[in-house]
Image (tube, rainbow, N blue to C red):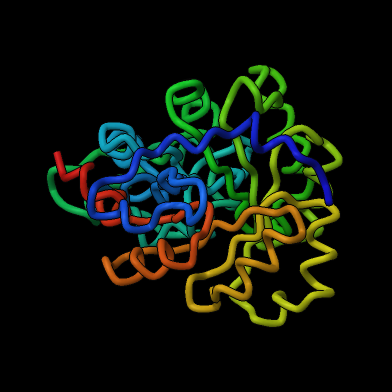
Length: 277
């Protein structure tokens, strides 16, 4: 087992709605608590990975925003999901081939609606400075193999802000790249780490035991979640966060499975009290 910081470092503060009270913890009589994580912000309602989406998530009282971190050609850490800008902006090209100035010149909001015209690709620093201490931040290192040294750069930004101490800030780091997560665990041993997967090959006892040596979270796509998997992850001292919820049915399924966090484009699908404001 890697470490047992989560109980003190990450409080599960979401109070469940009456609709969800049926899913109380069995023996204690207390309501089950889990984290509601806004995937790329409240991206069902605002353009993903923009300040508009992160502000919407905070207004909806999500527990965390999930962000994707990459690096510009001139070395600036930026928040965007795809390795190219083609889908979510009015530009073309790969993130790694564009300077920060070029990235900042793009419209990252209009694809979601005219009302979001002019939204920018945020920098990692901007997101940390705007939201630290106000909402949890789940940081995904996106395609880190394209950005040698990005692990050290992310770690440095967090250290400079004293965000490497989980008792002070709700920070989790995750990636599909397991070698990157091993490196991040060595760099920032007090911050919870998560491994992402959509492969059943990573749900074997052997694979899970290996993950538990350096990760606190096992974060699978909801299509491979089962009660057996949740129990195995918990037995190894890890928590489980699942993604990406885009329907009420998927949210209900994960509530039934008793995962520790639900990563969703629609925070109100997980907790109807949030509503759309």
